[in-house]
Each structure stands twice: as structure tokens, then as C-alpha cells.
Image 1: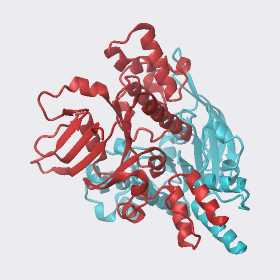
Image 2: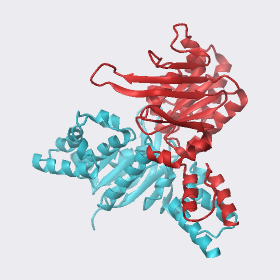
Image 3: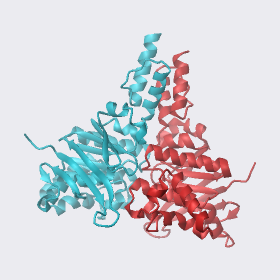
Length: 282
Length: 287
């Protein structure tokens, strides 16, 4: 049987564990990220989301427990490059990760450092810039791009490394509505092409896109399940999280006695359900 | 009508003027914030929102074009009392890393009020109030190392540090981005509470149209450095087409009602929040 893409087993992580006041950020977290899956991770501020993300590709190493990427222990220095090439990270502010003076050089940087041969590198680069809609901007300086284009460039630079998984840590938070939607649609297309996605977010309406949702609370996994199971879970409100707006409206209408199905979590589903209901009544 | 707290008229700003990297950030922009008002500034990336916000506490001052009056002071005037102005106008920057400076959370929040002359128990109580105002536990957080905090916790501490100086106007540049829903609600509640108790005004910059719809009294929309729409929140949010054209969206609640209306359900589309949408849909479904 093949290894799961990422196996997180009883993972604990403390910051400053050798100092006088260690801060435990993760406490016994276990989860699997399967090949080609779409996972969302949510939780209140300080619940451990970003720490977990950084453990997935070995940017942080477990204080206790194990993280294995394609069967490779992230603690094993011999596997460090292979692990980082398989699991790419996009942060909230891409400016923090840019190093080159043109879009093309920036996108090629990571793969170049992994020693990808030049002809192969160029063909991957062309593909990655096309996938992210940046082909026409390849000679631009990254600092002159819009926020949405910068986020897509950060993704392009990972795609050139041919990863199996893309981890997005609040990458949509600073984007205006259209740019945010474009980024989410790009992520959906990459997922359709077989890439596994781990999306860390506070925007509850983004959670609905995932196949599996994990809720972190005080460094522990509090709830795991499908978006529907998690968003309808009675413990969710107690964890400082809200329903997406459409689900709030649906819940209110259900309480008033409208016969809406349980699975109306996003706007399109709610609108369809309401129009069907109205038609059935008249 | 009372005098505005902030009156910006015909303001233009160019970065690196006269160099090959010259960039026009603002062109003939107007912005007004009235006493005890929660005003919002929205626009796509690069519209000039942060640049404009820097004029409100005189980090930028008009050189040739435009006029900026903040709390009755002309910020271009050599007689403008910048110390006074910056005590009265608290700015929370987009990146908390640029704002926090002390090693421990309690000291960081005490930094502003200490310079206003607070000390001892009064200072401690002010810090406690500010930490709790943003939803963090005082005992648990006051001795935490500032840079060991998570991203969302740092943002809360940055907001607490500004609130602790009891400003007359607070400017929040994407400051609630990255806060969890409960943290956002806490910040909204404290802004409303400070407005009610002592007339504090706020200027919020946000990419979340849902947040603006729920919180703001008025909205100014910037696009490519120009103020293209402004007015009461409901009026601006009802311009769905104009918002869409510049890459913004309507608040989710309104988009739902809009889609229902287009699908033939006679529902009011002038709603801002999920609760208002629920009421409007209920009216339409039980007509």
C-alpha cells in the first residue's frame, strides 16, 4: 500500500522548548493528507494553524510525534529537499518570499536551486506561468505586481518544483474580493489537475470548497469531517468560529419554519433551495 | 452640523516623483470622517488606501496639492502640533511586525499610555482594559514575548496598544485581517463601545465587504487613486454593478438577495447583513 502523502502522527510542537517559558502550540495532532485531496484547516487565533502548516514541510520539526511526507520523516536531514519540493507553502504576504528581479526568475528560483536541468526547468516554467495567468508578465519586476498577481507568482514558483501538495496559509486574507475569488479558482483548477491542497483560512465560506475540514483549538484537533459535518457541528460556535453568511441566513430561516435542506452552506445552494421552495409553494 | 474630524480635499500623492519609478498613488481624493463616525475605506489592491491613511496622522503631509485637516489642524502648516495630533489619532498598521516594539506584551501596550504620563496602578489598569478589550486574557498574555505570538494575536496586541492611548480617532489598516470571527466581533464591539462612551471615531480599511457592511456608517471607495464612490454604507453597497466593475463585491447577504430577485423572488435587495437578509427573505417567502 502506498504511503499517504502527508501523515501527521501525535504531533506536538512547543516554541522555545529549551527556554524557561516554552509555549505549546500543538498537542497530539494526528491527521492524514491524501494525494489529490482538498483539506481546510480552521481555528481561532493562536490555535496552532500556522505552526501545523510549517510542520507539514519541515520548516518546523516536531517536539514530539512524527510528520512523514511520502513516507519520509521530516526530521531526516537527508530528505529535507525532497520534502520541501513535494510540499510547497504560500504565506499571507508574498512580498516576504520574493528574491528575484523578474517574474520569470522568481518563479524559476526554487526549482533552479533544486538542480532541475535547464531545458526541463524552462518547460516547467512556461507551464507554471501559463497555469497562473502570468505568461504576459514574465519580464515584470515582482514588486510592481498587484496583490493578486503576487499571490499567483508565489504559487507559480512552487508549481515549477512539481509539488504534490500546496499549503496556503491565509493567502487570500489581504486580497480584494475579485482577486480573492481568482486565487480560489486557480487553487480549484490545480486541485482538479491532481494537486493536494491544504487551505488555512478564517473565511468560513472558503471552507465549503474543501473535501475535509479540521478545526484546531488550543493546539488540539477539536472537530474533523466534511464541510457539512463541521459547519453543522454544535461545538463550532464555542470555538470562536462562525457559519458562512449563507449558512447563517439558512439557519435563521429554518428556525422560523422554512423547510430548507441541511446542506445549504453556500450562497448558490441557498438561492437554489429558496427558489425551488417558492416554486413548489405557488 | 459639527465640524468633520478629518477633511481631506483634492489630495494627490506621487511616490518617487521625478524618478523612473515614479508612481501616482492618489489623484484629487476627498475623504471626510465626522465625530463618532465609523467610516470605511475600500478598494482593490493598489487603489491608494494605505497611502491615504498615512495622511490622517500626518505620516504624509500634503506638499503642493490638496488640503488635509485633522482635528482642526492643517497638517501642511508648519504650526501643526504633530505630537498632539498623533496622540489623538491612533494608527494600526497593516503589518503588526512594524508596530510592535517591546519584548513583552504588557510593556508594548503600556508604551503609549506611559508616554501620556500614566504610571503605577492607573497604567496597569489601562493595559489590562486594553488587552481584555481585544479578547485576550490579561494574566495569560501580559508576560508573553511579543514576537512569540501568532499572527492573529500580534494583530490584537497592536490594536490594544493603540486603544490604550484612548485616541479620538483610530485608523485600522486591514487590522482585523487574520482575526478569527470572534476576535473580529470583539474589535467591532470595542469600537462601537468607545464611540458610544466617549465619541471615538474610526476609519477602517478592509477587504471584507461583509465586515464593512456590518460595521461602517459611511464608505469611501477608492480605485486607481481616485475616490469613485462615497456615502452612507447602504447607499454605496447598493451600487452592486459599480463595485463589481472595479473588482469589489457586494456584501454576501446582499448578493444572496440580488440572486433571488433575479430568479424571480420579490425580495428587497437593500440589505447589508445576514440578519437583514433573513428578514427580507422571510417577508418574500410568506407574502
